Image (cartoon, rainbow, N blue to C red):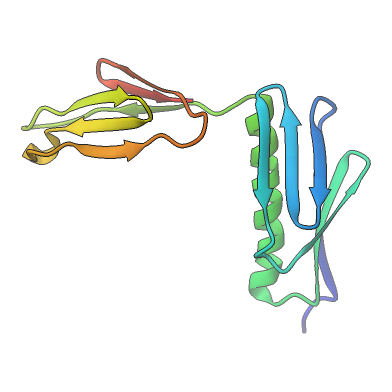
Length: 139
């Protein structure tokens, strides 16, 4: 038997501002502003003071799972605008020496498995990428 309603609440810290318009969530914090559109998800959202309530009425299994997924996305957005995320990648090779360079808004990976052409990866948004010897730092 299906539940009548599944709901979860996300707590908003004091140093973060949240605005909800329909299913579009905008979060402002120390590190910037992020906006995410959840219009594809069959859920409802409302902002009550410093709490965001996400719920689905008469949800099927996937819709009930989406409630938790959307809450996790909102929590990750809040963490991103407060503290930011840093990823450290290691350049590893065994036979073909790889070289990685940052040029404008692209990352060039040269000599990957001995390929003659360089592979390119776009840097999205305001992401910062630094290459330090064998480490790549993405912020």
